[in-house]
Image (cartoon, rainbow over all chains, first blue to last red; front, side, top):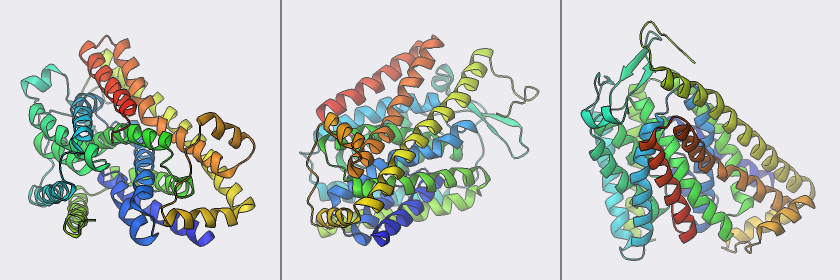
Length: 275
Length: 140
């Protein structure tokens, strides 16, 4: 029994750590980890994954919020798009065939990975565009010298469109879509990467929290698996978020790209094998 | 936490909002996390000490795809109070899951206090979307 518990805990700690550091939320590692290593069915893995996504988000948020990385206005404005997408996705779930979606998702992940490694430099926008200025979406982050540096935000419509897509994917596939959220904020809206990670982390928690509540109330969460996983993921996420402010951004981008490719391979394999 | 008024001075309203957020949100998150962690660890410890055979049985049943029957929340509470490890773990999971929803509600109050009506409306939209999703039983 201690072998089972220890194995679940180790898997969860690793998933939480990488999830917090990348802003992906840890759930993407928990599902394949539980299915492949612990031999539990998808239904159990997805339920535990949703809980672990909430746990990662909450654990990582402690340090993110305190250090001022989370941009709450951006999170709330974009969450409007995500929630709309999630509801649409949930509605569409019965209409579109799963393999087509998974393949589409895998391709999008690969594209995000490509963007991650080709775009370099983390220069800040000095001025928001008119819409973002009107909504006061800009913020400030500590620069290399420790002084607070203001940053601007642009292209809210573009970001919102990607967020609707991310929401649709969440509603359809039961995942956090953290990679897409970070990509939208980092690449399209030009938010600093660390702010994107922290803000995405908050948004993932909101969507997954609602999903997890539904799972819990339906009795679809197996406490025997979800409880040790939640504990491990929370611990891993706390450590991950402590490391983030000291992390090397270019290394983070490479790590992020590797993770995206891995999800793409996993999703593509699922689509082709028709699981 | 790091204020450098000589380099950048936000408006008093934003500074106040920032202070409240940075002080209260981590405190709230930490409290809920500690409480849910204690409850979850208690549940796991009770499992290890008193029903390790049951746990292994449950785990193997899960591997075969046999889920636990859905129970009323009041039943789970009663079982947890009676020391049932599975019910204690379930309660811990419930507490954990409420974190993000409480955070959105907290944000709503903050924007309301600021009379920042664009964001009050946006947060209200998010909250009602989440509640609708939960009611439909299909979101996330």
